[in-house]
Image (cartoon, rainbow over the protein chains, first blue to last red):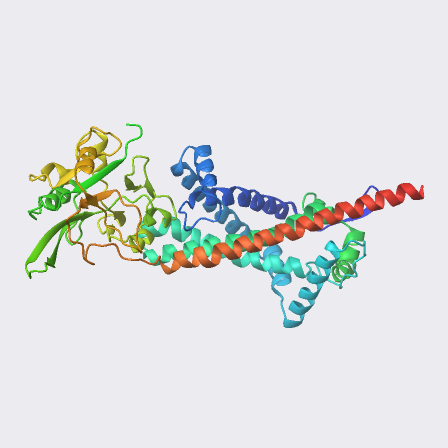
Length: 238
Length: 246
């Protein structure tokens, strides 16, 4: 435990996890625009054709755009795979246990909680939310985490299939369905990233600070994650 | 040359089905057996007096201005140049065959020699060097004529003015091809374009994935944009209340 500006802080993240998060974020902000630039066909693209032309002009042609997207995608996949192997027991498994422990009751509770939060955000009256006693991750975070884990695996596998598939003689159906799944998963993750970025930047800047320094305010944990607060107390972290 | 619009004319009354165009194309492009980048199809009509008439129709990629092969290519490998020639960039072609499925003229195929998509390119290297496509060059009876429709002095421009021509289109399928045929040609179902459905994967992308993602992402942006505005309003009220209480 440490203190910043008289507010007791708790170290909740290691530097490696923070670095991986920002590496992942940068990759998403580079891979998405380059990927959108590659898909040019009028019947297949999701954004105006001008974007494709802009990106291709920016990097000197379609060849460079495909190369940048592919190399970056492979680097992204490789770094996350190596991180997973290196920190399997200390970071990855505990994270998966937290995020993927889903029961019908937890799904119901999470859904109710998310609706209440959204209604609260849009309500003209300032109202203090009575938050359920969550563990480290609340319902929305668990949903986003599950989406990101499942979709990232699918994105990596389908990306590799599209990049290497034609060269090793995979059937064209594999390429085509990979494209479908790749596009769908990227879209689904971005749908989840909108509230993720909103809460991190606007609603809960303490959380953003936690993803920069690794420290969270004790009061923030106590208010938002009561169960986790109790766990940290029992572990002597607080 | 700037502002070129390259077209092919097939004078079907001059064609004698010698197959010279097919052989020249095969030799030029090393097309494997069992596949063709161009072909000649016979159609027969029976006149009112019961006399059969045979027509010889030289076919190939029609280099359409509304080319479904281009709009269904995920990587931009299929594209149309400013002069109207539809090409396949072999470097980016994955051989996914999404374009093959939608061509109304069945003018594309996956080349088993390299697993890339092949089709008539109007012999792009030759025409870029100022030569004629191989099929045109060997057509001894001048049934095939190629040139720039935007050049009023070109042979194709003169012929299009002097004679009547038609395109291989139907009421249902008109992809604005740049290939013309003699007006007198009898066209039956074997040469007319067929309505083609995109691959199931292309359908899923255009009718499911893109709408779901667009609506979901826009909805989220709208929702949290509104939340951000509400936060600003609440914050202003807080500041205002604080200053009043002071």
